Image (cartoon, rainbow, N blue to C red):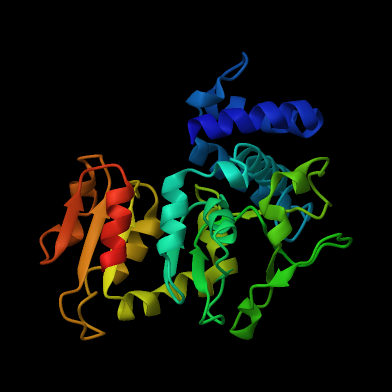
Amino acid sequence: MDQLLDNTIKIFRLECPGLFKRIDNYTKVIMRAEDDIDYTKVDFADLCTFLEYIELREFGGGQRWSDNASREKLALRFYLAKTIVNSMPAPDDIPDLYIQFANELRQSDIVITFNWDPLLEIALTKVKKSFAYNNFGKAEIRIYKLHGSINWRVGLPCISKNVWTPLGLTKGMMKDELYYCKEALYKNEWNGAEPLMGELEPFLILPGAGKAYDVRAIAPIWYKPEDAFAVTHHVYIIGLSLSDDDFFVKSFFLDTLPDIDCFSGVPGREITIINPDRKIVENYSFIKSRPRVNFVLEKFNADHVRQIRRT
């Protein structure tokens, strides 16, 4: 995340210097610094929380830029997304491991991810498999992106050259609809794109205190995976460490994983956590004593793909 923020700041500073100066000044307040900031040393969650505080003041004074977020937050999301998409490999250069993983996914499989990037979607497209971001396409591979995605936005743009498809969240209790655009998965759509007021206004849930507000926009996406845990045979958690300050992700697993045996009646269900960091055992201490919880202290590799296929 530190390197992502640093690379984002470089593009932000170059393309939008006026608004970047505001971000930079806020960062100096956080860092108690007067000189230039080394953004590899900035706590990203602290920066996002301070931006939420600034937005709170603007909201109280009736000066909020948009119902979706402040100018600073919208611009930061935009340049984070642009940095991510510019660092993505071309479809022909996607790592073989991802292609293997995409090939092994079957219709109605569910992938829950906390990543903003679209690498899985591009890999699935390359191997000619369809996917959906909601629960309606039963014949499709479903991708639940619990932290948003670079190709999502709240509401339709005023002017659009691409097709924006609703996620269908307003079919439940949500008031505001989110939309996704498959063209926005690729970097050519970002060339010349403008932050604020443009077609691309990526919905990314940032760390920090503001997360408690933003997750409400996609509450059904956090709710529906409970059904997935109830009926799946095996659960694989790949490379996900649990940060001490990411209370939403920790709470999500606290609420679902300990009781995974209670609902489906499927015998022999297992939870496998694949992560090379030995701290991961303690991070998942709330389930480590339960039967059929496996810790694989390795980087995810092709052998694990074959193991998932067999189950």
